[in-house]
Length: 178
Image (cartoon, rainbow, N blue to C red; front, side, top):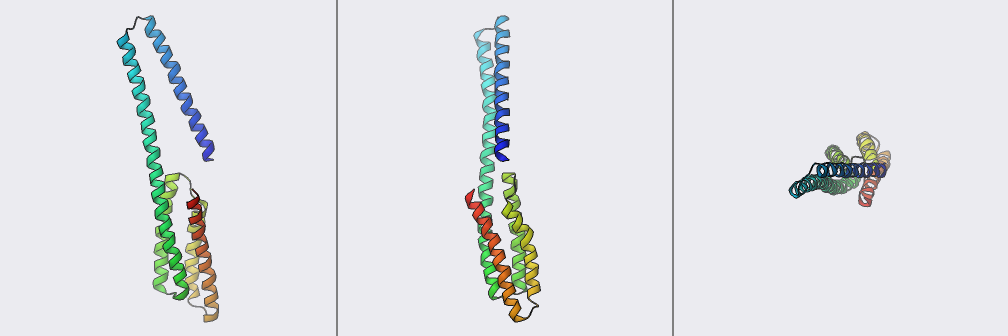
């Protein structure tokens, strides 16, 4: 989809430049027929090149800004997911209300960073969508596991935390590949 939009934008940009070139040739021919002098030609060329340079420069700056924002959000998300993995691994040993509270806060923070990442790339990473959709439910299941019998509790906690870590590692892998 992004490749298709890029080719459409490139085609539109080419059409605009071509149209501006044809319009410029028309103005030059008309001015020449009306007796324009060298100073008029120089003024026209300066204005035309200035406008083109301004548009290209603005688009370039915006593209660079988007890339910087994306890299920053991706780096922040990678750090947050690393902390998340350590918290989920720690929950296996000592699951309690404080750990669940930390997990809820971390999920909220990761969701906020993923929104920044989505805005900067104008498309949500599918793995991040799955993380934001499934992991909050898993935190609720961990809370339910605290009331289970000891034998079932450990197995259930191991299963849920393994899934949580898997979602986080999937997102980290996707981020590193882009």
